[in-house]
Amino acid sequence: MKAHPSQAILIASLFILAGCAPAALQRDQIAAISRNTKPTELDAILGKATPLQQLEFRFDRGLYYARTYNLHTATRPDFTVLCTPSCMVMHIDTPVFTDYIVIQELPSKKLLAWGTFDELSKDPDTSISTLLSMLKEHLAALRRR
Image 1: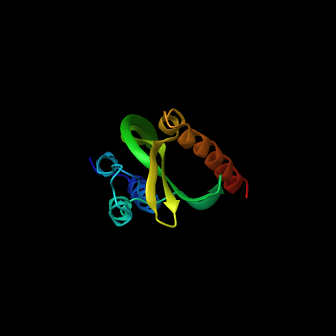
Image 2 (image 1 turned 45 degrees about the vertical axis):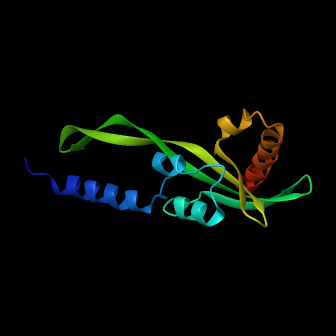
Image 3 (image 1 turned 180 degrees about the vertical axis):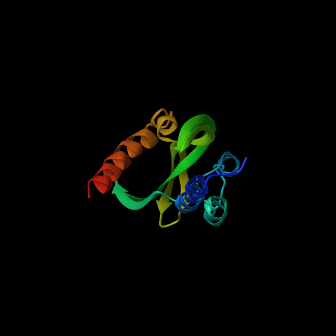
């Protein structure tokens, strides 16, 4: 079946839009992170993903560097109907993302914490969950600007 010209334009537009999206963090990347990951190794692991936000902030006499990412967690099937002049159902795989955070101490850039906001808020180390609360306030302030 030959595509109608407007369908070809729509499909080409979807491909172009997909190329503009920030590169998501993948599960194999986070699997490579450990407590012993050196700063240069961490930058190499995260290098292919685009941070959504980056900030340095002070908390309790310390200086920290945080980056947030979209972590690709799954793909869900979606459908849409395209009508030009006849209608057809199109199957689209839609990626599912969750926020992922990496926190380092400065100036050493030593890895302090990494995970989803939910994971870090439940960290048994109360200094991490307290630091996360402060980070959330800083990120909320950035979004309001």
